[in-house]
Image (cartoon, rainbow, N blue to C red; front, side, top):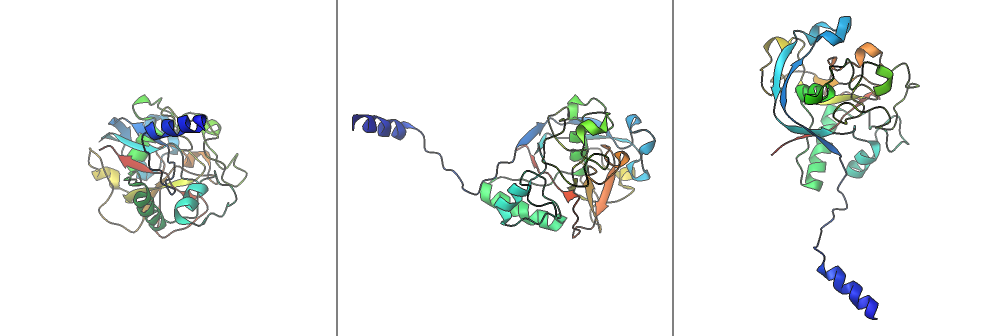
Length: 250
């Protein structure tokens, strides 16, 4: 009886912490803002496409970005289903999700967690993939050896893999050069770099396609470079399309 009373008194002295049963653990990495050259830089070699030119200076504010791609387990916890074609792997990235469906996920996640998650802009995505202010100026995110940092066409066995299995980049972020391509917030325009604003660019004001970045399990090495640009209809679904989250610094 005495031991029980002591335990009860000790518990009463602890601060009360409300725990949300629906809160999803999204590990975020702080990215210190700075200025970098975006697009077809020297280390990208002859693989650059016309939509990566001209290389241009961009200055970004501080932000946070997901350490990992959003997983099937995290999607299921928020949405209650799993749309992935490569289902049955809770720690694999969720895929077969459209840009518009991702917006519904974010809206629901923010309501559940009282946070302000969003998709990264294309510029935020590339700066983080390049390693931010710790960049080693690699062709891929964290290395010039694609196989050490990416699940891509030559090593993926034609499927996704659990997040965080390859080497992280300079900021400790995983899978930015492979596994799945990742939706960004921007409307896509092929010649956007010609007129892109120098500070916190957010893409064209309208369009028919949204940007996605990062290559994926089905692509060759040239398509998983940090400057490679892709786009898809915001209603598109495919087993190589997923996402990671970002949020601004208040």
